[in-house]
View (tube, each protein chain N blue to C red):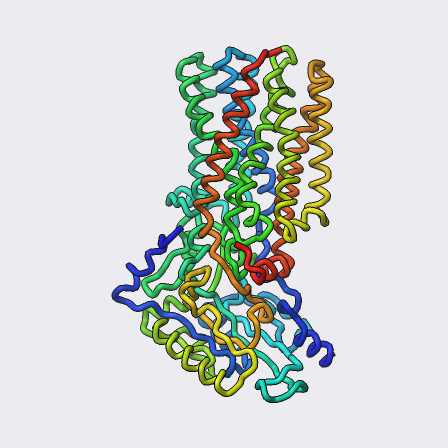
Length: 274
Length: 297
């Protein structure tokens, strides 16, 4: 649909803010998960043991806005380590705050909106729980909170309230290794490019940036990542596209279907009545 | 355990087989709304055009059907909301980027027009009724087809990749159900247009669904599986059987009742098949990851 998000208008004076999550220094402490839950009063949603390495959170959702993935692999950490390497990948996932955000586009109430920081936030006093944003998100970030009859869609706000007060988001504040870095998106992108160059120079296996490119299917992420394996291994889509990119064609098809329907009914009533 | 987790981590092409997408949270109300919205939209068109051709009997039946479907639709939709008391927030903004927003306005306008039209009919204001009927038929067209865009405009592969076919499929289903409802409730002597519409649209509906499934290729295989597959087979059988019965015995009362009921049920089952396919498609990460890796448009 082109640039309907008017992101540039919003971020002219206040630069666009975001996260760079450098998973190469993540130690899987889950301080981000805890800090997020504490600050944002995100309710407890069950305690289970999955047997999937150290991950018992499993996925982002209405009640999990930071999720640390754990992947154990018989793969070398560096390319020259030989075949019998062993590595443990950890990565803190979060809402991507897309440049072209499908959730925001399809929200029928205007509950989802673009903040002055360029982030995407659900207004909890507007959302009526229609659920449209949930299958629209190409990352499966949003979900409906079913605790105590809440019924609304929830996701990471990039700590909108903290940003308003001049503080960094709770997860970034709590991260002990600076795996989660908060800042101006332009600056984060430069920093990420340098970091990738360094890791590739050192021969790290699989190092790649994910969501850094402003020309990808969602116009780049406001919260992007440095990964050490393919995105799908972390449960992320390798080449996501904002669904509304194809909406003009869908409305055109709908218009043609309307014409066909009118023609069909007109044909049916033309003949005899008996 | 440790070794198996490590082997899994080394080989996996998804995160422990977990979905990339979230399944929709929509419940049984939504496929029924897809049916009711189509029935209401196409019936208002049938009513308007039948009256133009002087078939008052069919026009009145279809007006009543359209009214009933258009009154039921918002009730069904509100009950599916996570916060039903906030249903009016749907009319807080108008967004062309949100098919649900567009649909909410179309449905609101359509229901209001139909209520006014039925009122005019009961008061004997025929000219007002006909004018409202024309407007109502105009809104009925998008009402019967926009639901294809509603599902297409998501990240769910089996819906998004069928985005160009879904409005036509739902339009055909809408026409089939409107024709069948007309044939069911109108005396056979006045119901020939409704029968023609029901028979041709039911055949088209079954054919378009097959075409859509074929064109989807790999992601379309969910239509062969589980609930989407069962509803799909059921829908095809009901639609084709109903069309045959209407064609052969539709001029008799009993034949019209049976054939129309089958076509109506087939059209409802088609919506259920498409609805369930979306859940199955979102649930399996292969349908999200593999087309993206293959560079699907």
